[in-house]
Length: 85
Image: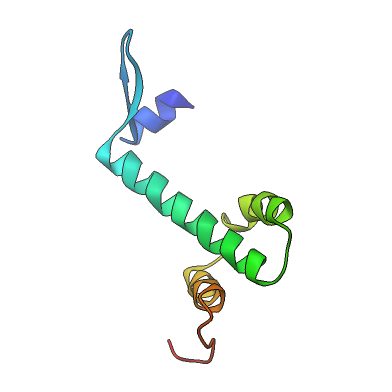
């Protein structure tokens, strides 16, 4: 997996020093973290327990569309969800 990530330019392996995210890898990690937080916040706004919301968001975040993610974000922030794209 590390070879694949390195080939995609997401990590750098430095001998005897470890593995480091590239700028692109750090950007992708930040995007994934944001998606997770949005989904988890949405589930928490629905009244889902913190532990269940954390676990469920692990799977949902990988499959949700940008449109749905934006609706989750608005809902969790207490904003109307109407057709205001």
